[in-house]
Length: 188
Image 1 (tube, rainbow, N blue to C red):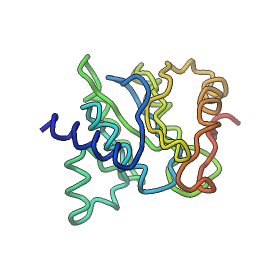
Image 2: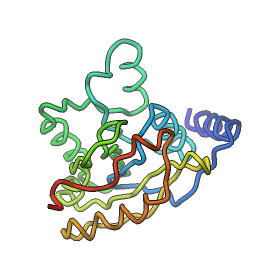
Image 3: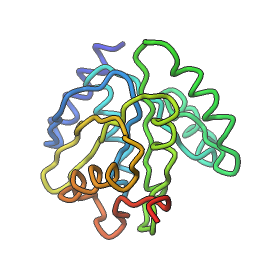
Image 4: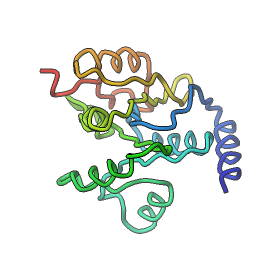
């Protein structure tokens, strides 16, 4: 099955003229941006399949209905109750213990529409677990999807977010007006 998925991803990405770049992470918290379209999920899935990795992608519980729910579960998505995320996060943190490959994917913008702040869960999870943050991205104009830098947050929220702002400054989603620039409420 992994060879089939890898070849299918390579074929589909090539057919739609998207290229993949970057060094594949094995453990950590993935921040995916810009998140402006449902196509972001498709490209993330193809990227994971292309490199034969599994990403536990946090997805709002409301989408886990009918055939879509089955598909999301089969592709590694994890239901997140946004009113009470603590139980899901606790379970994921327990899974992250140890040295096995483990990747948690979070669209920190939290929505496909422009907002004021990013959700800070990715940052808190990284700080609590000691896992690094890898910046995953897509850039629609260049038709590129991949992995950016990986770093351990320092605890200086503003300086750490500057890393994200610098990296995502030249990345453009499918719907550019929907992108929320990287900024956490905790920055003041």
